[in-house]
Image (cartoon, rainbow, N blue to C red):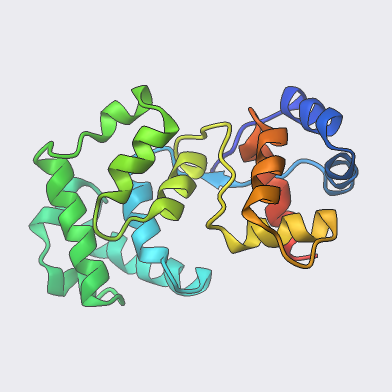
Length: 200
């Protein structure tokens, strides 16, 4: 299992920038979050996981892996939508997965070039695909590419974590942007702690 890599540099920077976050980091300790380095696998997994529980997503993912053997563009284009759907997902999700397999296989979408692109360019390219929105693209930036500075406004748990940390009943976009700027360039590590704080 690979985990999101960070260390003293990121922790010390965030602690210096934000006293409340500093206390939370000391209390919570190092957070280990699994990453999926293969971007295509992460893309398909993100569609499978949308709007269902982690347990259900794990079951559906297991069935998809059994069906395809290996999750890659070729195995997906060789399966039909009905077979993919029978793994336990909607026709719409199965169609999204098939569509992404076709785009990557035909090189219409070159995910290998993503490593040379900025976060905003990657979000733009991914969110243009059916089934991938801005939030999903941001999660891929963190949990597949390990990009260092991602804090998602579209993530309810991150906003809840901020509310819990700074004692807000509601959080405005202006407040969110101020905190996000404070965490930069290590926003992704701050996000890990905000997720942990969201359930407290």
